[in-house]
Every structure is written in structure tokens, then in C-alpha cells.
Length: 309
Image (cartoon, rainbow, N blue to C red; front, side, top):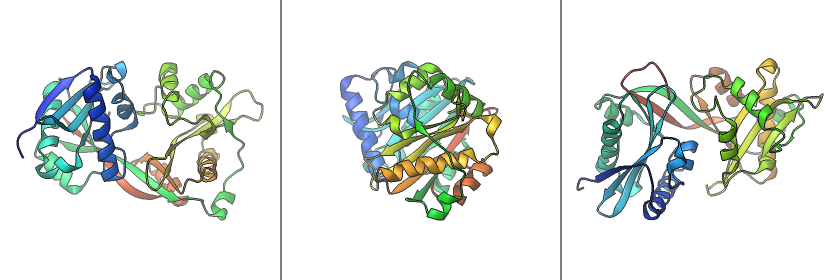
């Protein structure tokens, strides 16, 4: 295969924006899982890449877009790199190699390179370029509906749909406390929440919140996301957050089951979620509900190892 040409851009004109959307769709159809993490997938749909310091690396074979990477700054002066390649241009790895080289050249500090569905072969190939594995994210799945005995084993919980303008601050407070220090889910701002609520997939009925008995706050929530373009349709537990003052009371398990039940009622046949492999408590909880690991997404570090991103 002839060498690919790469461009590093901060803006996407209409043609490359359309080409990038088509590339990500082809990649996801071939792999059966998202090509990019959710924030980068959203950034790739905007001409200004989300306006948060993101950059895109575009790899072309002639006039054909065969690979792309989104470079995102992290709070620790490092760069997170998420990439996707065309299924028909993976032989030999020239597109991926070109994207990685461009990302390294464009980044002043360490980078965290994410490979979706990482394998031992990826570990070996990236080790030759100075990358080391640093973080594993599991995608786990479970058939729906859950067995009746599993549903009966959790504590009762009453939920309702999230109400924009009413629940925003309460949800942010709980989410940011529950995920303090988490590289993706912690530290959300009101602007980030409002932006995410505008995503095309958002169904507020599937954003379930559990009010306190007194009605003056929230115990926690389960935000779901239905991947209707996937076959089979996947119902994702997008994020579960519980007030840290109520940890250890079974609310996380109850809210997860509540979210899965809501998706079951929408006809969704498979539940799905992501969790850090190092979070043994969460992994154990999900396995007890019947989840099994579908694949592993891995972050590789090139440079200092002080932070994850």
C-alpha cells in the first residue's frame, strides 16, 4: 500500500466532515463497537471539533479518507488520542502508523493512545513504538430481560425522568462527587451537561433519577443510551451515579437494574456498559447481574506515567 498523507486540522470543512462521519460508520459496522469514545465521537460531528482545544488528524490514500484521530487535551497537560481506520485499509497498518506518528509530532507532552478492542498484537506493535499499556476499559454485556430472581434481589427504588432546569445542579453535584478524580466522568460543568443533553440519542425518559423520600434532592441516577443503529440493538448504562453519602446501601445495583428494566420495556434485547477493569467492586457487581466482558479498550502511554487521561 502506498504511503498515506496526513493533515492536522482544528476545523473540518463540509467535505471532510462528511467523509469522517462515513469513516466512523464503516469502522463501527465492521467492529461491532464504537470507533471513538463518546466525547470524541461528538467532537467529530462538529466543524470546530467541539471548540475545546481538540484537533483532528486526517489520513488520506489519494482522495479517500482512510483514517482519523481526535487529539484532546487533558487537565494534566497530556493529550488523549482516539483513532479509527477504514476496515478496507488496515492491512499493513500504514494508516494507523501514520496517525500515531502525526499525533506524536503534534503533541508537546505525553500522549494516551486509546485502542478499541485491543489485542496482544496491539500491545506488541505499540511496544515497538515506545507505548506501554496503562488502563483497561471493559465493555460488558448482558441479555435482557434480566432473570426475575435477579430483579427481585435488589432494593426497591422509585425513579422518574430527568427534568432539565430542575435536576441539573443536583445531578452535577452527585455525579462530580461520585466520580471525583475520574478522567472522563468527573468534574462536569453545567455547560458540558447541557451540551450532552443536546446529543441526538438523548431520551429524557431514559435518564432515570431517584428522588430522596423527602423530595428535596436526589439519591442518584441511571442515564441510559440506546444504540438503535447497532444489530442487535444495545441499551447502554451510560452512567450510574449515587450520592457518596449513600454508598454501600445497594442503590447503585438498584439503579442499574432499574435502567435495564426501562430499556427492556423499550424492546432492547441486550444491555451494555463500560467500566474500568481496575474497579473490581463495579466489575463484581455487574458480573453478579449477569454481565460478561465483550471486549477490552486499552489506553497506552507514551512518555511520563504520572497521570491517566
